[in-house]
Image (cartoon, rainbow over all chains, first blue to last red; front, top):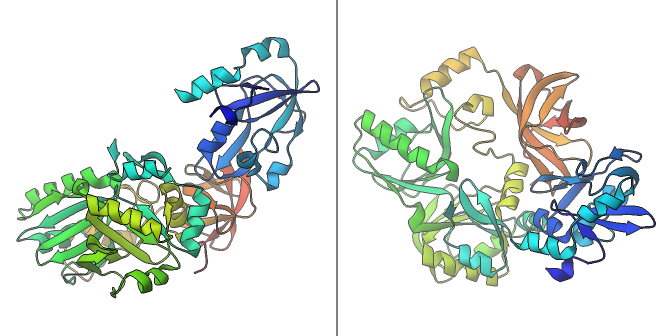
Length: 129
Length: 358
């Protein structure tokens, strides 16, 4: 399990990850989440410019089995979305931390919210129970 | 929760398990899309041990089953299956849709939906008692297992491993395949492809599961089974059919009037004169996009006209497909409607299933 969850980012109990990049927060779903969903066939992306609160549903990932909401790990504004997922939703299965990223958020309350996110060891504990 | 008797083998082979109809079953071995396509292009193997298996035997079994089911049981002979047939309630709603195997004179096997097994047994016992039929009803679900071998290339398997010939809707008893004892082998299935269903003792089932995989047949799970049956336009109990839906609404032609009195017949006959208030349709999404799912609403213009009962991804078409019910006056076959998915409207075309070409 450990090799599938990098320590350079933070996690949520709802199975999203958040990564700091040039003042923005890149988000996606975890390796564990995509392994449970399997066969992702559609991703509903958020609109650029949308203001979001931490914990708000901002995207939907649909697998053959089911549709799942993706919740924002931080508050802020959506500034970029991964357009490639429109034609290649399977990128989330193939590369959940790289090419399968979902959106970039300009955070508005990062100092407080970043500390509330889970470290990898706590996330691993969560998914192993 | 009930557990498939093959669970240990599935786990050892890396399958993912999940819940279906109160049973712990295989959801998928690898990718459900791959498994789906393996059946469309090759051969797949399913563990369907969760299906209910009920023996009905005794002096009055033929008359009794003719009274509780919708097709003519008197026309069956040993070795033949009535498939699909149904048990209706007095309002012509579905108690269940079933396969009825005539095992012998005065001995039958009902294969039914997992979700309805206990209800069906209760229903059968209740009717037998009420009408004084002398029958014995025995649940053999937990003493046996059931496998389905399905796929477009089933002929290859027939030529290599089966030196026998079974007609569609027929079955053989007590035969050997790959050196395993198969109690019942029927030419039947639920994927839209040809294939066989096998009922075996549990230990023989474990043996044959492993053997079938060594000859290159792909193990598949319930997620692929569901997308296959949806593409084929087959009705699922709890979705397209229920106690509240009748065969006319479902356009499920599983009943006959060339037989004696049976439960639901009177209501069916009066419905033929009254007409119906909803009708089953097939839907294919115009574009690749979000998937229609059970419960989504169907619109014509701005008017809500119905709802989705099953929806999902079609690996063959690479987009969403669905079945649902609309008011009969909106059954615009070949025309467009809209499906509301998470507050947005998406265009879909009303078509007649199956959703794929054979």
